[in-house]
Length: 430
Image (cartoon, rainbow, N blue to C red; front, side, top):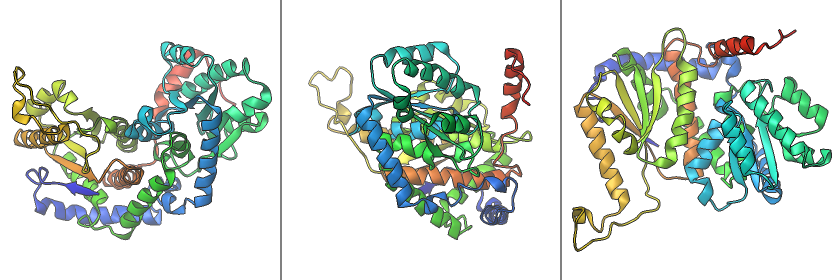
């Protein structure tokens, strides 16, 4: 992985970078030594290197069984319980993946009855397995979806068959979902207590759906472990791209850049950027602080908000994710009439056009007063995806400490829930 910073250092001097080096080192030490706020939720920090091959084999075996017996696999979860697996699956294009069976659907990420009704209509007559993911089992979005889908399944499958077709990913010893799984005999996978939801993509939360989609989870973990090793061994921002990124975005924030647009010219990265958005928003948005993360796919969104980025308020910067090695390519044919005036690029591949669109956009935005940098991964592979996941997890941990907030709690999430439960008339918990 490489961080291209040429369009950032127009706006930040090397001199400005020097004082933050010591802050990054302090943040690194707090992470590694577990002395900072939220240190009881650092289970993700060395998770990749601690993940055993036996554990991965068990997940792959379960995934193989699901593929044999199911036409549809439904992941029920919200936030970190589904964003990571969806990001991974869409990174590879699940509909075109070598394992086209089963179809993978997502539920429990909203309370929209139309969405769930349409999903249920689409799976009629199909063999299904569901994976409900929740630490508590009482989060209303996945809990309501689970109850409704489970009721549909009860009408079709015997109790013994349900035990095979309902998989609970939850805590090991407490919570309503853990209690239900034990009582009903559902198959279970466990989320480490010290890993928060938005950091859970490299646990069973993300790994089982990835494996069902045919993604090589051993390679995902290997990529993450390599970045873990490099990040743990050095707090020097010149040697550690994750720390360099964290330092630069914090300096830009201190200089008045309050919005970060995570963007790419690769459509396959859209859901990765949605996962990134939650990771950073929930980690940093506290105590009246934080950059506001926004995801965009270019050139599509250049026709939606490109004008604002180019000439609007100068309160934002961009972080591009680029893929170095081109995948599929299509050459533009030459036409005799040339009515659309495109013969000047006839014979060129769309990958070349896409790359020039990026180059032109990055320069135009920088010229217009928008700092931007690019994180470059080698290729669209499981290994590089694992690198990407861990890179951002490590970066946001450092970035949260640079902001002087607890990166690993989310007290504000409860506010809407309390109002909703009151309006719904939920009985007080005893």
